[in-house]
Amino acid sequence: MSTSATAIEPGGRGLARAISPRAVAWAGGALGILAFWLTLPPVTARSPLVPLVVGSLGIAAGIWSWRGGVPARVWRTVVAMGVLGILLGWLATRSNVDSLDQVFVWSALIAATLRAATPLTFAALGGIISERSGVVNIGLEGMLLMGAFFGFLGADKLGAWQWGIVCGVLAGACLAAVHAFVSIHLRADQIVSGFACNFLALGVTGYFFIEVYTDQGTPGNVSNIPSLSIPGLRDVDFVGAAVGNLHILIWTGFAAVLLMHVFLFRTTIGLRVRSVGEHPKAADTVGISVYGVRYAAVIVSGALAGMGGVYLSNGITHSFNENLSAGRGFIALAAVIIGRWRPVGAFLACLLFGFTEALALRLPGAYGEDAAWTTLFRTLPYVATLVIVAGVVGRSVPPAADGKPYVKQ
Image 1 (cartoon, rainbow, N blue to C red):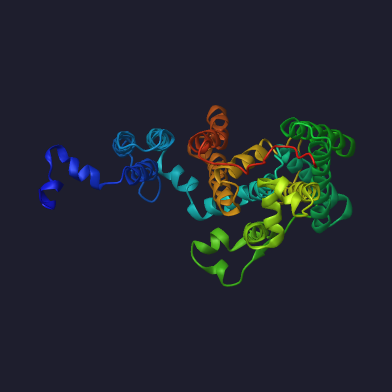
Image 2: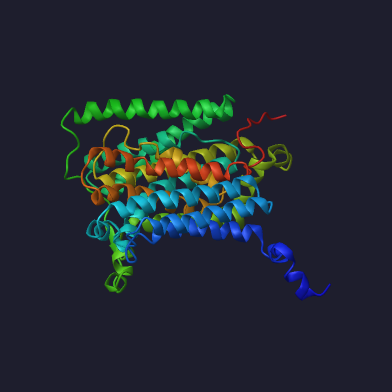
């Protein structure tokens, strides 16, 4: 049979074999996103039929890719994206156009995304270096919180935001040292140790917050992290409003992602960290101090998380309240898994979560100040975390020795 005859087999089976099911799955995911995007500015489709039709096509693509043999997690994620695109698109059509125009100012939304993603980025980088060395750091949440409080306290009492960064980084590193001692030296369960550090941070920061600031709250004249305005860039349409005037620690976060990638995959010390996390016995055999590398990695992990906490209190909220981290450490851990323990992948995941947080803060403006809507939208980052992690867990493989205490022979 000729090639042309094969392409027109009955039922289109020849054409079906020519199309990659995975490519169809990607197209289905894109249709799910498109279903929501078409209802937003500048298109702003007002008919609920638009997201319904486009999202349904995405769902159909997911089902077709399932029949083509793609993994279950892939096609289920595509179907979920189609359903989510329909629901979000329908919600967008419920709002008036003027409100949507105010909420979806894309340059402002990008700037808000970068602000929200920066604490997650520092914490995720900390989680990566810790787990690459073989120590699970569930305590990132507590280290973020310690950095946030003591960073604010240092800037307040010492009169400079630079000292706030120093204090916050040291606070995060100190809590990480506790986690390292319990997990590495005492060989305790690393998950339990991390959760204990979270509760310890909650108690310590809560006590000192009440002791120092009583019930009057934090002062409003504390030295805050300044923004870096780039001449020329800030005057460019759209780009200037999005990235022309960002905090110093946002730019530091960008640099930290690149430096962490180079450190882990292009340096001898980074190779040692990864070898300790993969094959600690072999690393010990060639003279690498497994305990020393793990201690250093966990303490650096806490310092990075503390840096994220400093930005949270001194760069975003310009104040401190109890439990200010509000689960961001756990979202950072999710970013580590989604990014497959690689800095760039984790950073992209942090941007996604930062976008959902920025959107959650702006969406209530499109639906009035109804408390029910406001509360519902605030759950968006956590819902996104659950959905995305459900789609990638099982396909991401951690370092072989991650979470396993090492006993020197």
